[in-house]
Image 1: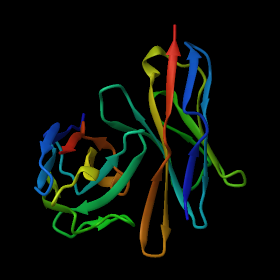
Image 2 (image 1 turned 45 degrees about the vertical axis):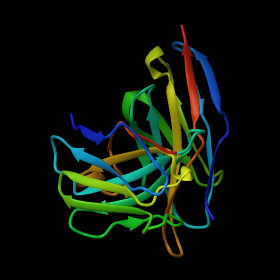
Image 3 (image 1 turned 180 degrees about the vertical axis):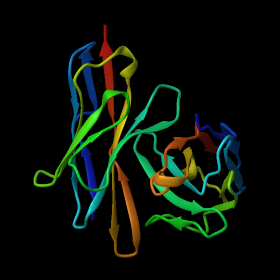
Length: 115
Length: 117
């Protein structure tokens, strides 16, 4: 079985400070990993994804994430946040189990960027 | 940039009726479209992947006969919730993709809030 845990439901941070949104997963099969962002009153947007290769993945808007297989983590980071980064962030894991594909989303982390 | 239009944005229906939700790629051809369900506490569930001209691939645990997906053209996919019940009330989101990102989706619609009474 697969599961995704986003360790923080809310993360308040001041503008221009660094931020890390944590994501841990469990899976018995190989997985692909994703981060999505949902801005207020808008649809979802893919931030970045890890499929294979380099474990450090760079995405849009200055975000990056690092896949750590030994710690089963895929934490999202940004060195300096802006007010406009305030949004809901979702980590997702896609793997292959008996019977078909399975994509699991985390419960989300709400990032509040304060002036 | 790529735009995906989802319609309707909100719908209220009576229990036992069916509801159709449309997802259109406005300025590109989407070989693959995805349907998601977002629960009240914001967690998301990928329901199915549809490829133009072929049957949808449903995720584990999603009822194929309950959630009918049709991808009749490269710009339109529909999700029909059949015999809807109050537990089907949710926020449904589609996304569309083409090319390199075909397996995972890039552009999302703005979602449809379904309320079954």
